Length: 343
Image (cartoon, rainbow, N blue to C red):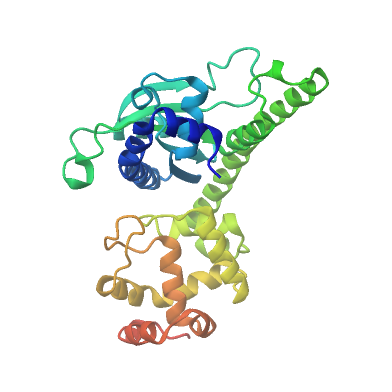
């Protein structure tokens, strides 16, 4: 059944419906393009993020909005036909994310709803942009999108969680809530802010631990490689072993850790011996059969995690049995003579 706002718009301004659909594909393409640019830029900058989502405004939402706000020129006044949300992990990354957005796009408007929150508002806001694809981009991929505006929201993962809860409760400001709930909501808001700070503290502590492992291996390789393998010691080892390769996200490193545990790698020295035996073979294999970048589809080098997996495919029978296809085995066999035999 057609909802009341949509039905009303259809009866009163059917040209709005037609124009909405005329622009829908362009708005979807703009969402995809802005998301692609942001994913690639944040990945290149080494910024961990929870997710980057994109959505083109639905017809239902469009009709509800123009029915509620009585726009005279909805296609000029509404700015969120295309929307992208960046949800990142650590508050200290915000400045760099701002810099990336402001260098990658032409900014029409920037509103910091975190800093400018009114006194009677509770919870977290977000950083909001209205932006366009830069004018210097050219070609069929961009020419149809340059004059369109995209709304981008930037939030930490806890800011995003708070916004979702607040949206569900439908409290736009503190005075909307019953008095008996206001204190609880304010206390909860404070806990979210404290948790954001603590995540940042843990991140700093983890970084220091990984740096410590890296430095210890540099000073005394034999002693330090006897450390047990855990997520942070593995990150430290990977950054020491592969300083010129991308050190993958915690999620990818965690997946590798589970695989190492499955095949009974307990200490860094055991992993280092396996990687060392296959190192020349992996480099030769990578040169002939390079992996492809997830975003661009272009040939690239293995990230640190990928290099370790490729090495284990050369030297670990259990790893081969579980992960190696017949086609991969045939390609790998070309380089078996470069593997150092176990002594």
